[in-house]
Length: 279
Image 1: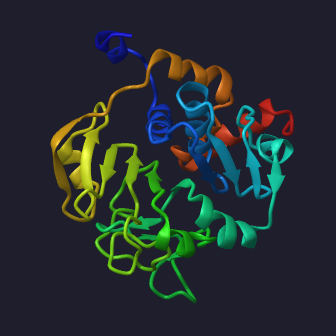
Image 2: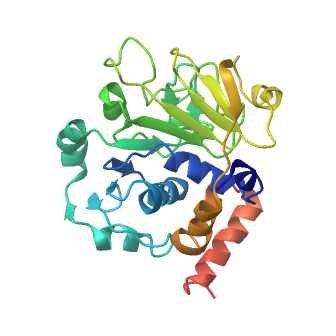
């Protein structure tokens, strides 16, 4: 497909995020996925369906190792992972024994992230006993981020509340002296652009179509470094969009991560109706 043809492919932000996630996958990768992260699942499956046919999935749902896939769902999420697992292990075995050896790639969604790539999935507010908002928790994040070279981040709704100069709590280790050489987040994908830590601090490397550096900086709570070769994020191909819409996620589960409020509630209800579990 020519560059001119690529530029006119109609796509949504959730599809672009999933494609950006897929672009970080290489053939043969072991890909770890947490709970309630459909954008990540969509990106992983898209990579396997296009350029990484030998990718394996390690899922927190059932702690299973999976290579087969199924269309995304909500009420039947286990169908994608537990029902197709080649093997199961306890969470402790995976986090303490398997993951340090296998070194999978994994995308985490932070509640807060600072310029060095440290991130927070514990709580918003410094009073842990009475936080303003409790986040999902750490899982194995404090263990994995100390040593893993395969940590990636994604933020579906880029805002100053998430990109902060100082964390309320730290659950994930960024680019600091406490980490092992080679560890620390590699890439962050948001709904505005793609970032890296090539020089140890967050750096904007591509801008999504329709966004600007000024808009991204205004929605970031600390000064951004900009890559000298900054360019627009390449759009999805027509085939990538078709796979996401028709095969991988025809229910649009991935959109739940980019929506908020009543729009998210209404879309969730629509998914459950289409799955036949809600009248």
